[in-house]
Amino acid sequence: MNDLYYLTETFMSVQGEGNCAGIRALFVRFQGCNLRCSWCDSKYTWGKDESLQALTAGEVKSIISNSSAHNVILTGGEPTLYRLDKLVVEGKKYHVETNATIIPTKPLIATLPDGSRFSRDAMDEDVIRHFNWVVSPKATNAGQKICEPALRFWAAQEYCVFKFIVQRTEDLQEVEKLVILFGIDRNKVYVGIEGCTLKTQLRPTLVEEIIHRGFNFSPRLHILLWKQERGR
Image (cartoon, rainbow, N blue to C red; front, side, top):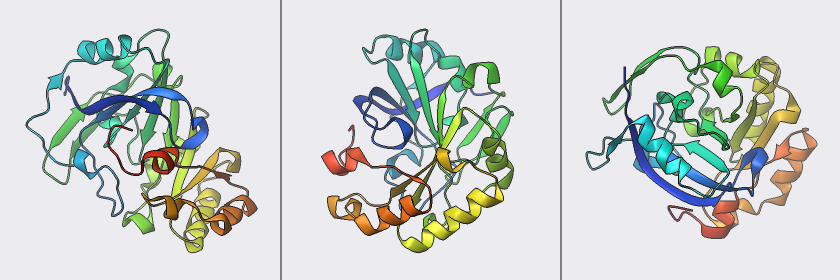
């Protein structure tokens, strides 16, 4: 099993999306992803990068411990490729951003599109249930298919919210179907707008439709403030 953690970057910023938008946080970005979404804004996490240092759980925890931030956001890439339950530091609040294709409480053996291989034991649910999980299924507009077993798992959990990214009104119809099919609580659904420019985010008509359907609107504060600048 993999006992090492490959980090693309760590940085301080504010959470830009989801149910905790605006909070000050340490971001820990992991390398490696099992998807290839067409509009992904962090494609630099996809492939192998021999320059990345392999860190132990203790070394990652040291980075977290030395940060003044109370909130820690584990993102990627796809962070559930790693044993996140081994990274807990007392006194910190953890948030995880996942693509809803992997069940963390089951062992994992995966070969990524670039040929990288990941394996890990199941995570301890008694630990990860205290994380704020932001589950972001990637569907048609990203060129992906929903992983039904994983989404059914997440729909049954109380410790997560759901974030969907849309490009147009028609995408909301797909979100609507998924919410109904998997019995997802609308109060836990946040919908953001795809794009990395100010213009793409200022679409009041689309936001009004999001609200009309009973969903929460998720801003993308990092895009509004810094566009696509890394480390923000």
